[in-house]
Image (tube, rainbow, N blue to C red; front, side, top):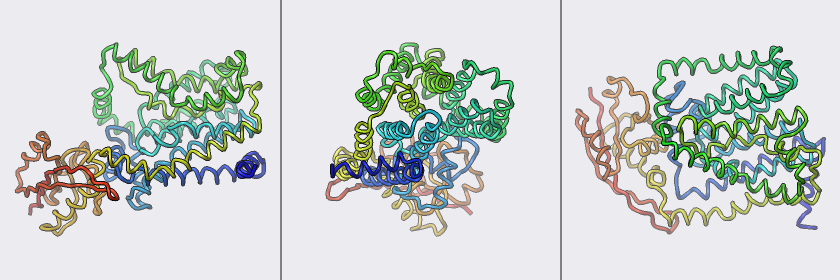
Amino acid sequence: MRLLSPIDRLRAALTDPVRSERAVLVALAVYLLLWTLYGSIAKSSQGLHPDMTEVIAWSRDLAWGYKHPPLAAAIAWAWFSIFPVAEWSYYLLAMLMPTLALWIVWRLTADYLSVEKRVAGLALLMFVPFFNFHALKFNVNTVLLPTWAAATFAFLRSYRTRSAGWAALAGLGAALCMLGKYWSIVLLAGLAIAALTDRRRGLYFRSAAPWITVGVGLIAIAPHLLWLYHHFSEPFAYAMYVHGDKPFGVAIFSVLGYLAGSLGYVAIPLIVVFLAVRPSCATLADMLWPADDDRRLAAAAFWAPLLLPAVAALASGTEITSLWSMSAWTLLPVLLLSPPTVTIRDVDLRRILAAGAAIPVVMLIASPAIAIIAQRNGPPPNSAQAALLAGEVEQLWHQTIPQPLRFVGGAGDLADGVAAYAVERPRVLTDMPAPDAAELRRDGMVIVCFAADAACLAKAAAQTAPVRRVETEIVRNFLRFPGRPQRYTILIVPPLP
């Protein structure tokens, strides 16, 4: 009993109507802190993932679009205007996305679940890797965690109440989703399907709510639509090059992988609920497709965005991955726990809370060993050595050039890594709009390539300005564990008068 007493106190605080809101905020703050510490330690031998340094590179050239929409870059720009560019601060930002999503889920489930079920549902989502392990890699997928949750919450409230305020928030949430990633079209289409299939659709569409949602959404996304009009081919050409125009067999295989993988990611909450509830066939049917209108609307808003990608992928010959279902699980606690026949016993709630609290603590304890294992396996040099490479680039630059380093080009991941870690915060020249030729000539640049990357070196050789070429070898050791050496070619293109 002594071991369970902290969990009992936590359960009492979370289920107390007076203390629950504050207790949830405190619990989520601890969750944020523990997983940030875990990421900072476990990944300390690996450096920042290229997806993360790419977002930093975008944030140095704020625009209304890149190969993806601009929300991730705008968030990074705002964050690093306050916090230093450091691994700990970046992991803090990364974990803020799922933490905010979990808080929105807590608020949303108040419309469907008792307080005990809300607590259980929140803890169950903490078992899903999307809300911790995968979320530590901040990118255009993770920013969808809170935006999809917010848009779904506002839409459901708007549909039921037809309130102008909730309708406006739904439109703003939808715009933020699209500004995060175009994948969000499946959410908007799914919510539209949920609205059209609901028996109360006449009341909803005769009200001002849907038109307020559409109007606010269009206004909020208008600057990006204007950018897209002028740069239409860039993001869609990238998406089709990477994922589109696949043979039908490849599309089928990817759809099966998407469905199976998505199910696998939420397997633990499903198993926990099955063991705790032992649902009958009637209860399972009520989970999957409820009888009452409000819960059925929520079920449609869950199933449509999750399953639409499979249909679209088969129809268009597109390859999809289960990782993209990351943001689609907001309503999972509602589906699993809202049937009246589902009851959560106190003992089961305590066990769920104990497991939810134990996982981040155990992972934090294991994080030093994880960092050492990653080092011994040899982390990719473009991330693990990026900080050392950035330091060497800046040192070579300032040996002969007094002015700040402003531009870095070359291999994409290397340039992004140097830009992220360099003290002078240079801009990248890869996958970004080229600066004015006169500006580039006036400020000079550095080009970084792997020494064996013939394609990168060939592009660098096209420079007409005098170039200083330096070959260097970098080894990143971690504690007493040696790293693998990697050779780089650094080309210094000095400013021209």
